Structure formats: structure tokens, C-alpha cells
Length: 161
Image (cartoon, rainbow, N blue to C red; front, side, top):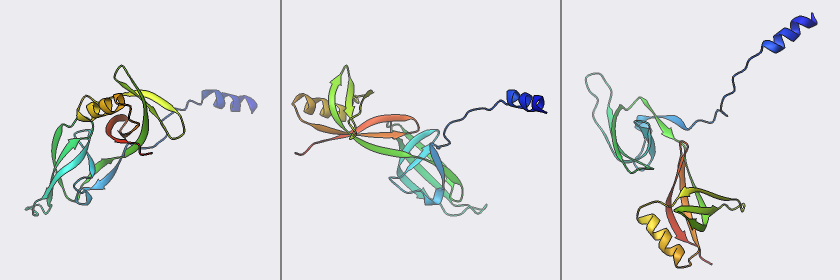
């Protein structure tokens, strides 16, 4: 009997998976709102325009949405029956203190004192403002937006003493 149990233990082959935390969740089209988030063509987008058509001959009102990719700024459009679900990305905003800028990378400190050096200073107006204010000696906080495994610096504000 012991030999059989030993064979079962040795033959067990389990696949490991991720933690199960999803990058998005479903939400009915009619419940989405302007300035909210939605996944359009695989990209996390902020909804900038929404309109709903009347019910057609098949009985579904259609929702027309225009969204801007939260990381690239690219515009996407989609049409979905109001009763269908669309995926909404989990989007988090975190503030970090800017410690240094090295070769275009921002060195950021969390409230816990941990530092990270893996985000680039954006090559846009916000990035220019961050670089200018940092070089002038200002103490800055930067806002980092994270969603679907990507992160980007989206804003800055001076630290008031």
C-alpha cells in the first residue's frame, strides 16, 4: 500500500499560475462614464467622449466611445451594445518624491523610504517641467499612473514645507 502512495506523490505535476489578481474587470457598457477608464483594442484608455444611440430594430441601444490611451495618448474608438460588458482596467495612482534624475531615469522614493529607478522622465511638457524644477533645486512629488503592467509619470507638484 505504501508503494502506491509513493507513486502517486511522485507523479503529481501541478502547474503554477499567477496570484489571480486580474488586470481588469467587466462592466456593462451603459454603466461606463466619461473620464472613466475602459480597455479599447487591448489598450487602457480614458473615456473622453460618449454617446448612446436609440434602440435599433434588434432592440439594443449602442454606445459610441472615444478613448485616449493613458500611456501613449493615442485615440481609439469603439461601439458596443449598451447591455454588453467591456473590460475596465485597474488603474492606480501613486505619488513619489523625486530624489534624482540620472540618464533620463527618475529616482523616486516611496513613503516607506524605498527607492526605485526604473521609470523614465517623460519626453513631453510634464517631463520638461520636472527637469526644469528639479534643476532649480525644488523638492518635487511626481504622480505615477500604473495599469496592466505598465507605469508612467503623469504629473508633478512641488512639496510645500
